[in-house]
Length: 326
Image 1 (cartoon, rainbow, N blue to C red):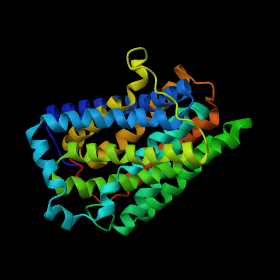
Image 2: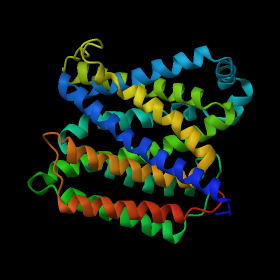
Image 3: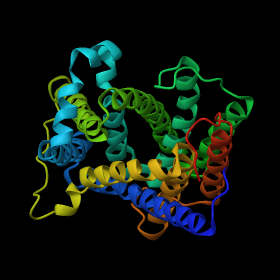
Image 4: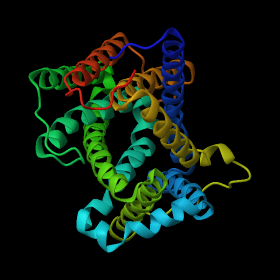
């Protein structure tokens, strides 16, 4: 951490505070998607509402901005195809899995349990991603500190599930899904780094992600319909229930804000603040606006604190070329 004049330090702490608030507010997306799922009793359609809304918003910006349109042209250029493999374009599948979990798991166990599991999965997934060099920075050595931090995070998520008492088995199922979704999103972030590096546009990367996520959820919908015989539900009216359609725009807001915060705070600082903010926001929602399946116990709080410590330790174990500039 380099030395800065007092005014710069005040600005940095102001940005850190704003990043924390925005990250905490991002937990609202999980609650919105969970509420949409409960309203129509169909988590796949609810997830498609969120991802589809994000795709519409991001594509509208993409079409209206000349620089973004030029970047879109680079997405499938010969030079980009040489630097990216075909499967890199499917990074958005991770987002689709994550959003589907919000609609499926949050109504059953609450925002906190799901977000704790996702964060733990991201922590573990990042170890694997760095080990195999999936991101644009290539292979990175996984330090002992990061490995131990991952173990600590796993312990925290187990404690959180145990804190559900009689509903521990239901929470455990949600935790398992959340862990998988966290690993999927860590892979998504790594692939997005490669796509963003190739096209130099976060907006193009976001639009591509939303489209791939929507495509995956469409496949889920047809499997659920044709193989399992469950008729798709009609989405709620945008005019009568606009709040149930806020998942996509909230996701876009977080993505756009993240680009700004990473630029001025660096990847390392924003990653830690983002995780802590999302966990704090999830806890606040479960305490102040609990759903039917929400149980806020002492063990849940212990698990949340344990995972938070694990995430901070994991971040400290990242090599110092991550762009930390505060």
